[in-house]
Image: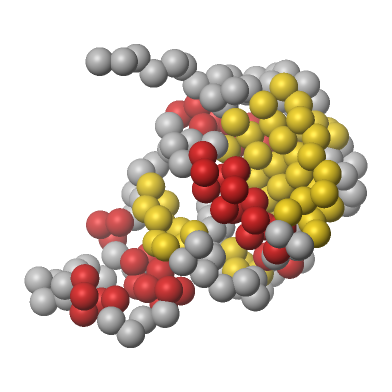
Length: 197
């Protein structure tokens, strides 16, 4: 499906709930290279992530796969909390939970979501964290390659997590149940400093 000249934005958006608009945008081939999310009632579009970001995501996915977990990259999530449909860098779940191929994927089927900070730090640190907690996702791992810090959030209560554990790159991250292993972060790399013009 492509946008025709007569499909101006106003016509597309008029009367469509946020989630319907997201479904529409997901079907436009010209937008395939963008990560499109619904965050706090707003459609957010981001260019594809940089190589160091993607390397961290890949290294994590391999570790979960080796421990018989399913790691879904950029899987759209939904819950009863409206105004959000994030696509975490990784959604961790089981093969049984994905058997019905439901999309967007229910947040209550995942014990852990992972975000690797890219350009929009506010979204990862505040807005998504709030939604993940309200949606009762048991663990949220936030990896920040700007600072070299991994923060594991656990025990959601209300609009936040009760427990935060910080680890520097290179230190293992011991995940809470139902996981029985620690994540290896020794190959995570910091983003290079941005050069000023």
